[in-house]
Image (tube, rainbow, N blue to C red; front, side, top):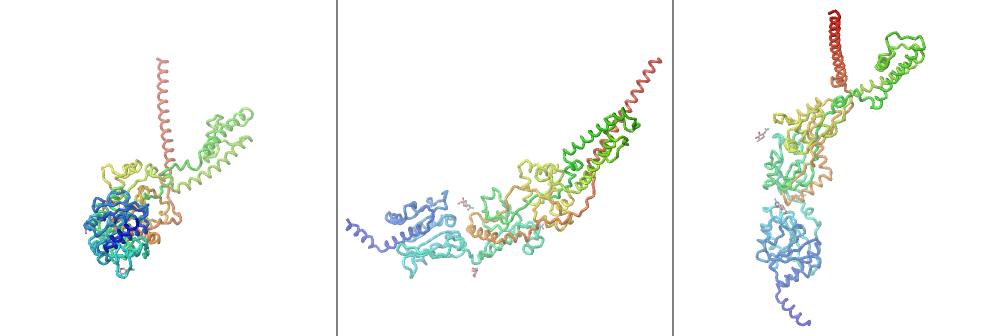
Length: 614
Ligand SMILES: *[C@@H]1O[C@H](CO)[C@@H](O)[C@H](O)[C@H]1NC(C)=O
Ligand SMILES: *[C@@H]1O[C@H](CO)[C@@H](O)[C@H](O)[C@H]1NC(C)=O
Ligand SMILES: *[C@@H]1O[C@H](CO)[C@@H](O)[C@H](O)[C@H]1NC(C)=O
């Protein structure tokens, strides 16, 4: 039984090329075992059946292997688990180079590759095989080759920064007789390949004011293009971290014609200005990290309390009001009883100032409440007790009421807390004239938000003059009764420069945009994606991102002492005026009524007299 097998092996061994070939295949399957990736292995080659068997027997039974011919259609373009694919290619086969060329993006995006060559496996020659191939920096391409002075094989990786730069090789480890020695420092290529050797990255930057170009680094005019500036610094830090150099290009907007356009058409690698995340952009660019917190909100000075409430009713709660009224009625009734008893049983008389009926006594107590004193000059002991007691109680009420009113007239309202409150308030609204403000206000569909735009911001003639400059808007906020939709960090700078100390108190904010913060983005499927993302995360974790943010954005100004004096305006006394006016109205109406009534009566009397004498 053994004899024929030995002959077979001897026959096979007689071709010396085949030995190395089998070793190479074993090395490949050993490498796959060693990498321990959750993979679907696909071999695209021109191997013979025995070579396939050799390869397969080197793997453990949990790895699934597929063998295909070297045809483009066998590339995993539409595999949902693209990232689990490991492709083995034999460069010795005739169509392998074409196959790799047509692989395009797959060479550096998600898919891992092991490339061997069963014809010439010397390392120097092998490296040339990768000329013109897109093995960009994020690629995971291993190749196995023979190196001088090394027993067995060397396992290497190759990458390049762009198609025009030269190939860079990394040594992964060595294989000898089934043993792999891993000499690589870090498992992750995005950590290892951190040095771009002054490679020139192209960054596109959005500038909305022409003069910003001259003030990108000097922290002057902070409120102009603040997002641009803070991300400009971050971009520079990223480049420094990656040992890359930068070439900036300036565009005026981050629309599809601007920065996104440059990223799409490969004019830029990095989007150097953070931008809002919208659904239609996700397909076009890769968002990496939240770099600039956006706090775009409505800001306004809280209006006086009298704008939102009737300050004359506020000092007492409803129950206290009910108690006061019942007290007056009760004491009026008591006074009436006392007077009636006095009238019947004593000789005390009050002339005609107050007659013993309910209306008069209640009026009397009401006068006492309003600190007008009592018309009744108490003569008997019970009435003295009643009047004295009432006066004392009403004095306390009066004192606390008027003290409260004074405080209330000076205090700001905190009634406006939500967008709905804002919509129903008397405040006007406007927004800073920026691209995103216009976009979001005009495309809003949520009912309350839409109503704010329709009712408060859109003019009847359809013009949108409520989009105004920062300075104008802040001035309007200062004057009061105006809510301005603006980037807070920028707005606070202007506020701290232009507002009086006491005007900084009572600033309120309401969020309108329902969106996430701005994101830093790069070209779609860019090979630098992971490197830049790691750098950005590092910048955030080390606090550098935070620092750059606060160097450009101003914090909310503190309110130091409300020693301000607010003069009382018509609004504050409006309820009282309304009462007075309606009093006049009723009085006038009654007068007219009485006159008419008198006329009618005289006429009727005359008629009667006429009848009598007629
Ligand atoms: C950055 O790249 C340059 C140019 O290749 C090189 O001389 C330098 O040593 C690199 N710096 C670091 C920190 O690796
Ligand atoms: C900014 O510069 C561009 C081109 O240089 C010019 O067309 C545009 O009018 C300038 N804008 C302002 C506000 O100066
Ligand atoms: C990016 O990769 C995805 C997934 O492979 C692909 O569908 C898409 O077309 C690629 N986009 C670009 C612009 O290359």
